[in-house]
Figure 1 (cartoon, rainbow, N blue to C red):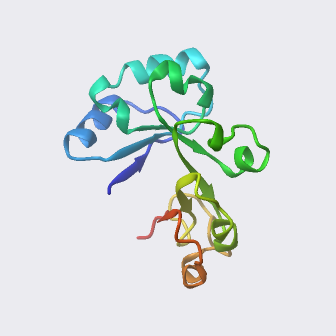
Figure 2: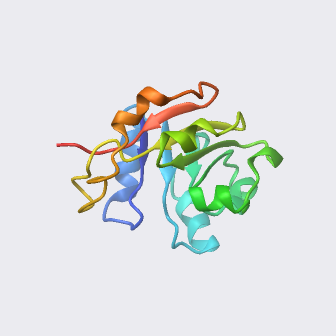
Figure 3: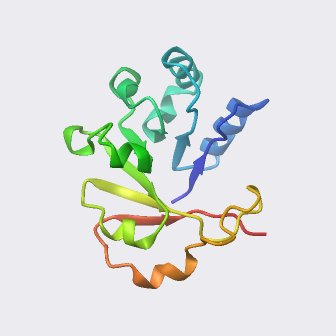
Length: 155
């Protein structure tokens, strides 16, 4: 499975890149546009060919999932811990993020998959993962009900 995440900020020719990725077989695209208003998010999603909407994952704006006909929602650790959105009360496919294998091991079956990061020290975020890379934690995985997807960039 090929999963991509958008940059938080828009960039020139982003939509063309998104369409090209889908045309090349991208399975899921996580939309990381946290700073967008509801209206901006609706316009952004509308600018992506509707053929691909079933492969979009909202990282923000879960309240728009029905209106946008997107049935995939990603909740970060803050949302998960504070009960901002309850994945058990939706028909959506839900994913989340964790930063330690112990957190991953406590996730219940309502989560389809979880990102575990950072696997390696980051080359794109200075200092990120220098002292908390999780690659060595994988051997302690005990939760096999939730799919685990490792995130990290390594040169």
